[in-house]
Image (cartoon, rainbow, N blue to C red):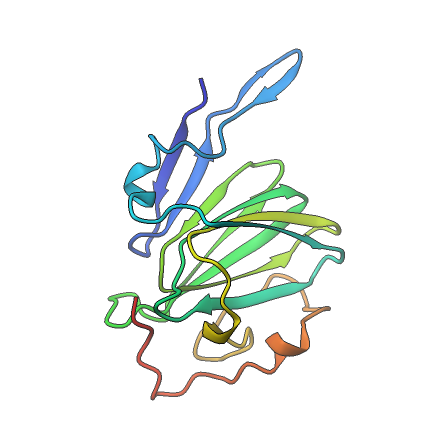
Length: 186
């Protein structure tokens, strides 16, 4: 019972995960994580931290966050309430898709998850009020090694579906990228 469908994206190493849902008159059952099914993705990246994000207002953006080496992390993200547009940007030094982004709608209804490899920035915009995400991380949060991208950076050209109504002061103050930025080492 269970099973997870792993879907490749245009960015190497980035995957959308869809659970196979079993429903009957009692409700539904589905797998969120299985070491056997995801061992290729997590073979060297055990989960070390789990965070729960609650965002009150539709239109809020959180992100775009990442950690520098040696604290680069794999993230596995699931929306457990509401709906978000989840966005990732490839920051891997030397990557063929450097600075390209990918977005996917995650919701409690579609039950999708996203596997984000090391070297990507991550953020999301809430598409419903009271949206909640669970994040599984392969590294402990290290504030001294944290980085961020400005969500309005023209170099990234991210099209947010809604007007941004809430953004933290820290996220708002991230500088725009320059041609000097060559990526992060993973």
